[in-house]
Image (cartoon, rainbow, N blue to C red; front, top):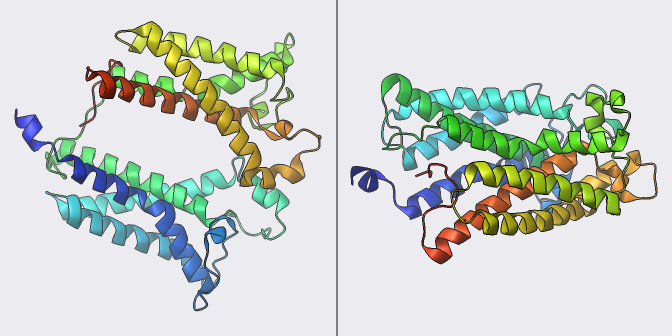
Length: 331
């Protein structure tokens, strides 16, 4: 009874979710405004995908990111925090700054953002970070969210402070294994594709092939059969380990939805702005050859995770039953 009373109302949780998602669009807007200041007449959504250039002074990016984080977390604390507000702001700000700095440097040298430096002439040779404002927004959003979660757990674990008025969710071994299995396709699916490409010469397997274009045309029967084979195997193991009841129905629904979302996501990737970035590096007539193995793995992971969440929530919504998946529900 106490846990139900202490649980924040749904509207408050939705409001907090919306607020912590704001950096995705708000921080790129700040970068664009600072770049074009004082002439803001050119501001539009297209600039979210254009290269950002900050050149007022050497550490302009650091000052902007630090100031944005401090203001964002201070407002978050005033709106939602109940205890240890000052400690939370300080700890979360430090972790967010470290996460953002590390993230921007890390992904700058990882596909597909590394193509900016290789194929965009506007990227100077001495510029270590070269990608559009929207990517900065993604990195900022993930950094802030992870910092909030980690700070809440640290303050509760060390000082027993309930920052948001309740104990943070604790993850057990089964919860960690659940998350690990959801992320597994990012590596497992590319490995499966690469092994199929080089069969039977598996001695040619190399790590850098994860970031190379696939040799199997995506719209071929062979590619689709590989996708279905991996999907069936992955969902069979998932259903056997994590699903509590009506396993056959769950397996069928999730598999169909995952396959549909995966093909849709691949089509969007081929047709989206990333294809423009990759176009100059693709030397074949088929656009499907521009897809890398790791990219297919990420798309599969997103499709499978979304499908599992959708089907699981539909079961609860339509039947009013307990969750199908045997993992402790988040408050």
